[in-house]
Amino acid sequence: MTGGPPDAPAHPTLRSPLPGHTSRAYLRRQENRESNARTYPRRIPIAVRRAWGSWIEDVDGNVLIDFLAGAGALPLGHSHPEVVEAAVRQLRLHAHGLDLPTPAKDEFTETHLGLLPASLRPGMKMHFCGPTGANAVEAALKLCKTATGRSEIVSFSGGFHGSTHGAMAVTSLVEQKEPVPGGMPGVHFFPYSHCYRCPLALDPAHCDTNCAAYLEHALNDTHGGIARPAAFILELVQGEGGVVPATAEFARRVQALARELDVPLVVDEIQTGYGRTGTWFAFEQYGLEPDVILASKAAGGIGLPVAVMFYSRRLDTWAPGAHIGTFRGHQPAFAASVAAINVMRRERVLDNVAEQGAAITGRLRELRDRYPFLGDVRGRGLMIGVEVVDPATGAPDPTRAARIQAGCLRRGLILELGGRNDAVVRMLPPLNVETRVVQTALRIIEATLNSVAAAPPGPLVDPVLEPAAGTAD
Ligand SMILES: Cc1ncc(COP(=O)(O)O)c(C=O)c1O
Image (cartoon, rainbow, N blue to C red; front, top):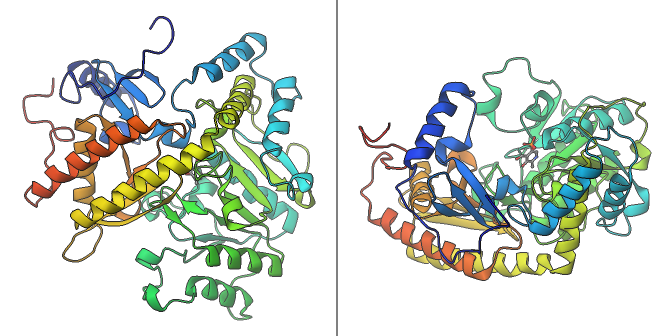
């Protein structure tokens, strides 16, 4: 690639069926050389040549709209020029800094603490974690256990917190845990306020936030079986769990209980942080004052790796070296982060999140009236999901969801699936996505829904995911 990014196209360009000839060769070599645990290429079978803004070009010259945005790590899409420039400048100056103070890190901490509500700022410190979300979760578990001297952790059904041993233990996904014996003990799962699929199997029409009541009762019961926990860990909008926002009442009562029992409340903002839901952090919309805030993904501006934990000073009882790691001082990531936040402020990107988020959810709700296999449309800001259901039974319909994802991909739009049974079609567009890109994506979704509605029922047969015999080379 020479020069800067190409001009933003008006539409996806599809030169070959996906995966194209050259992508196929990459995918085949990848399959041979890389782990069976790889994920995205299985449902998004392309090899990427370059990417800019909301667009990805594969090695066959196909240009697609990217509504996955690095699983939320690209708040301004791919390779925003101003952010790239800041990272490259810093890369030439100083790249790896352990946890020594540097001007780049100092500006990063100042900027990031400045994103917190004024009431929280003076009471918070930051810890630089190994540069993944899961590592921040590990840090939080250790911090809270050390500070409280307790061992039990309360987590919630549907929650996702990462794939390392401790983070997986507080994650609800049973499929990921079962093959790995000997998980971290002391984790207790309580129902989350997912009213569309009530985890207590109650009728939401007659619900008085029973999930919160159950938690309150269990933890106050002298015979409830759970010693006072070291932490509650909570996503305010569950991402991997199927884009499920907590209800305001549930979140309020979880925090109130945490206060009453003197249990630190950890909010996992690894996916929701840095504007994804329309505010810098989702907890602001719930009026919460968490004790620990975990951030990563979008923190690195253009997908550079960084993870931080903001936490209340009163928890800062752990010893020097209590949570270390070699890669906690990625100076270009710090510079990129500050540059991205400056762009977001200057270009009022949070307003765009509200505007485009409303446009997408509004249109999906209209489409739901036309396509009975679209169930709940939900989310906050530009973290959006639509649950695909069997119209006859209302049960999650992973086959149709996979068809929608594959059909959109064939037409040039990258989407993700998530939630129980992978029946939720998820969208995480760049936060600065333009109206015309959103409108093109919505037209692709509509065309795909039309063809999915017309397709005969039955198992998934899709040329993207299941190439016809003889086409694989
Ligand atoms: C809410 C949440 N927490 C933690 C993680 C784990 O982050 P990472 O994949 O960087 O380890 C994720 C990743 O999707 C996430 O969405």
